[in-house]
Amino acid sequence: MSPKNMAVKRNSPDDRRERAAKRGDAGGRIRDVLLLSALALLLLFAVWQIFYGDKEESQVSAVGSESEQRLCALLSEIDGVGEVRVMICEDENGAESVVVVCEGANDLRVNMDIREAVSAALGTDEKSVKIYLMKE
Image (cartoon, rainbow, N blue to C red):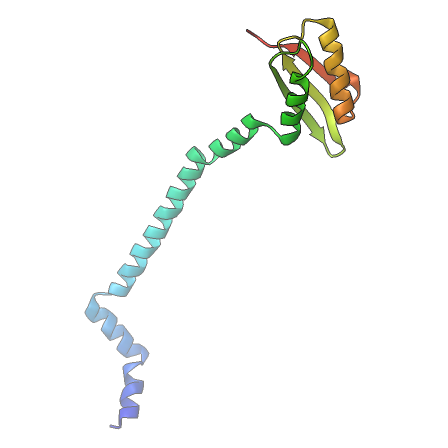
């Protein structure tokens, strides 16, 4: 038998089955272990996203958008406003409505100044600006 024929015989399907049987089908076991490991990693990733993935979103929303931060800085400069928080509700055309919570909301003059400032800064109607007193 020539070396060329031996190489062909070694790679025949029957020869591969015999070698797998001699190994105790170790290739199949390795495949099963790899598959279970991949599934375990996938499950671990899913659990991580469920319990720890949402914290980044809540931190971003707690900080507020750049427009909200800029509006807070502007309103806090108005005399009598005090501490202020702002939420801008937007649609595809811009600011639809604005909620302002501040310490000086009881003062009618401060209330009107806030309404005018928000309307001018965001280009919204003064009726869409809601102002509430901040709790102590």
